[in-house]
Each structure stands twice: as structure tokens, then as C-alpha cells.
Image 1: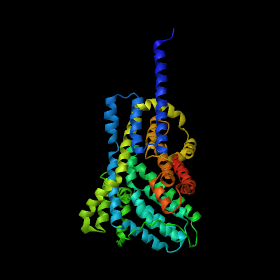
Image 2: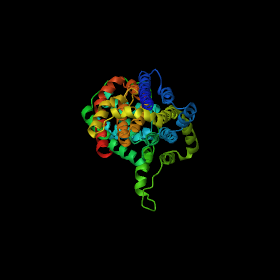
Image 3: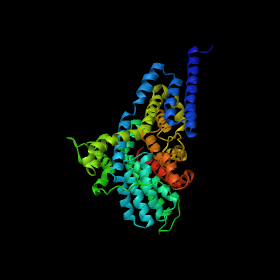
Image 4: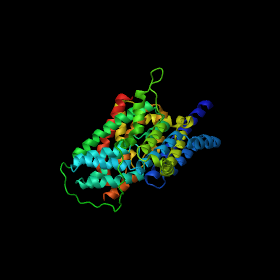
Length: 446
């Protein structure tokens, strides 16, 4: 006669396996909806969180309070940082700082294509250490792209340079640091070490791209430019041009200078760093207009960042649904069988799957990737910092190559190319970046 207790355990184990498989199928289903653009991430992420919570068997009142309610404010630190980052971006735009940085770089490059490409692309990177959003890309792109193409750089190469410069700057954008800190539970020291190493790697590959693809001598190029015009802003002082990197300098250099009574570095928080950058930008350009400039920048900055805030609300709900101990118990046994356990396996696993960051895929950290990261961490197979490093690394592919990015779509339109052409041109270089990033993580962060 069978032991009823043993039978119940077996049935419970089978039922839990079915629940785990259903949760994974939910991930696949919503990934399909986002990739095919049948449901926007703003709606897909909170919907997925609720469905996962129901499948995991969480009580209804728990779902309302701990998944929906607490999830909506789970990334409150990142949301606040996003708002201050958007305000800083408005200040940099309104005062003409970004315009002046680009034009100064163009003057330094002269009419030598490689020199122009180097100066302009790294100027874009400098600007986007603080800027973000499609509006900023359009504002900078309408200046940068004609300059690049005027010295004979092919439109697809010019488009790629803009996107690669944007991505390089994003690696040092402190608004992203706040997101990593809140969503991935990374400490600031780890984030800064990732940013520095990944930034150096991205810069080296960017140099490689320039020297391979940009002509050595100026040529006459025919290209169709959009009829959009850009009003040139007045000149600003040289020290005002430092505004975009003020928050970055504070985060990296402040702890080296200021120590507490025990000699330990004093960290400055991200919001304070950006607030100092905001005030510095105004005081070095238009100090008499501080009230109006600050007020308008706050209003327009919040408007610009509203979609990102909505996305963070959904990501917060998904993180809590996936990281809940109930869900983790169902998923961990399945995920642990898939994830690699060796460093070589880790490198191969993530480099082969890195294209899944494209088309809103499961390795896109600003979406489904946050939930995938939580699932991987709950499995306990890989160190959390290794998982986070891999997903930040694959973000290079999403940031530069993804045809569904609105900034890729606009850049392709402006240069009279298409997003698929940009994808084919940039993907090989971004795969090199991801490979080197993941090797770095495996060697130094495991």
C-alpha cells in the first residue's frame, strides 16, 4: 500500500513544477507581445507581474499590497534620479551647453574626417553622461550628423557614430546608476567599477570602428538631409561646458578627496550630485534667469521622463513578483538547470544569447530583463554581480543596435538609411564590446 504522505509530496512536487513552467511560459508570452509590439512594455510588465503572482498562488490581498502597491514605489530612488537627470538635461539644452560642446569639437576636428569623427563622437559621449531621451538625441543629432557627413563620412557610419557615442556616454550617466542600484541591488562601488571598465572597453572599440570605417581624407558626399533646422545658441564659457560631467566627477572623485574620521571615503548620493550639476549649469551660463530657467526645466523635465517613470513602476512590480520567495521556490529548480556554473560556460552563455537584448527581448534590462535577472539571482547558481554585469554588458547591443529604439528610428530617418542597415553595421562591434565586458566580469567580479 502506498504511503499517502509520500504520495502527497510527489503530487505537490509535480504541481510546483507545473507552476514553474507556467511562469516561464508567461515570460515567453509577454516577451512575444513586446517584441511584436502588440503590447507596450508600459502595460506588459505590470500585467506580467500580476499573472505571475496569481500563478504562484499568492493571496489576493498580498498581491494588492505587496506586489502592486509596494511594486509601484519599489524603484522610487531611481524615479527621483530620473526626474533630476531630466531637469539637468533641460538645463544643458536650454543654456546652449550641448550645442557649444558639439561645435567646439567640430572646430577642433577641422576638415579631417577621422579628427572630426573622434572629436564629435566623444563630444556626444560627454553630453550624454547627463542627457537622455529622444528629444535630446534629436537636438544633438541635428547638429552632429550634418557635420559628420559634410566631411565625407557615409550616412550609415555617421548614424552609427552618433549611436555609439550616445551609448558610451550612457555608461557614465548617473541616472542609470540609480536604476542599477534600485533594481539590481548593486552597491555603488560595484556600479562604478563596472562603468569604468565597460566605458574603457566601449571607447577602445569605438576607436577601432572609427579607424576602420571613416575615410582618412575629406571627400564630397551626397546625402539627403531632413529639412529640420536647428537654431544656433550663443557661446558659453569654457567652464560651463563641464556641466554634463559634474555629477560623474562628484561620484568618482568626491570619495577620493573627502574621508570620515576613520579614513573611509565619504560617498555623495546621486541626486545631490545631479542637483549640484543643475545649479552649476545655471550659475555658469544664465544666473540672472535662475528662477524661470529652473521652473521651466522642472516642468519640461518631468514631462520628458514620464514614460521612463511609467516603465519603472511596471519593472518594480515585476521585480517583487519574481523575487518573492513563493515564486523563487517554483522557478529556482528550473533556472538552475539552465544557467552555467563555470566561468567559461558563463562567457559562452551570455555572448551567444546577447542578441536577445534586441527587439525588447529578455536580456533588455529596461523591461523583461529585470525580471529575468531576478529569476537568475533567485536560482543561486551564479553570483549576483556576475548576472548584473552580464545584463549591463548586453545593454550595449540594445542601446546601439536595436531597431525598435526610437532614437535609432529617428537617426535612420535623418540620415536616409534604415534601422536594419545600422544594426548590421554596428552589431559586430557591439558583440566585441559585450564579449570583452563579460570576460572582465568573469575574471575580476566573480
